[in-house]
Length: 358
Image 1 (cartoon, rainbow, N blue to C red):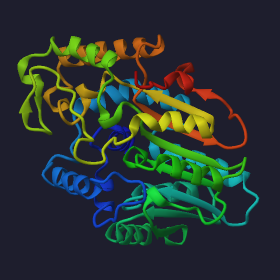
Image 2: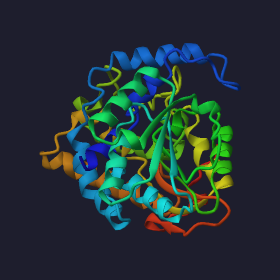
Image 3: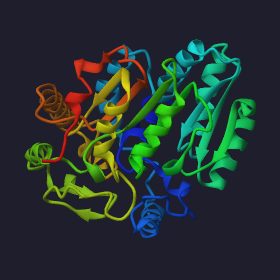
């Protein structure tokens, strides 16, 4: 699976499973008044996105060349290994006979099933992953998958809305895989997670932390537009929205649904509540050129296309390193009651990666 699994998790619009999980949901306390309308619009938008599973080959070129070496230096090659690595640590640190892990927004439980199998392959037993999900149909698919893969005893499904989740007891680890940027009640969720962990427990997350709606902040949008002017006209066609964008329009994905509804609040709220054992942020300007909207316009086998992506990536990295722009994605292993081990990808500190609104 490798970086294709990462691709399904880190790109804008790459969170298909979250849409169905909210079907039929009642609005949680504190949710926006247009909750139901947003839900309906988001479901409709993804229903008509026929290429939702199809990732541009240019993404794989970029991720294999630039992301994979970074992540291997941290001990994992793809998201499943990342979560398994962290849960294994929590398992060994726990004094409990049966370790309790919780996955927030588990969808079909596919990641959780694969993580359970990775843990079992390491000889780790006596644990359960509680898969928190609102959609009964998705939970049923998760149970079927767990049984088919031989890990039914390690997977427990729990129907709940993550905007109002309560732990109901201590946890050894909580994981969130591309679900946080759909949460409206981040404060309540993070407080519940922190309250469920002791100093040995871990909060493990992979998510998107850029501007709300996955827009660019002005300083990043200006750089995107610099490169945009270099693109041939046929490269400026948005396949997701089925429209020509001769100028970069920086679409707000949260206008109708929950995609990136509070993405820019995720990192500041995490920093307030957790220490960081591992903080791995990455990317910003590169996003529009390799996602499903415009990435299909590039030919990963063409020299000009690869050279263009290489230049965008180099500029992206340079601007992030000098603090001119902030990353839009992160992998993080967090803790409570202690400052954290402080492993930082490229030396980037969580507080320095916060971009607060002007």
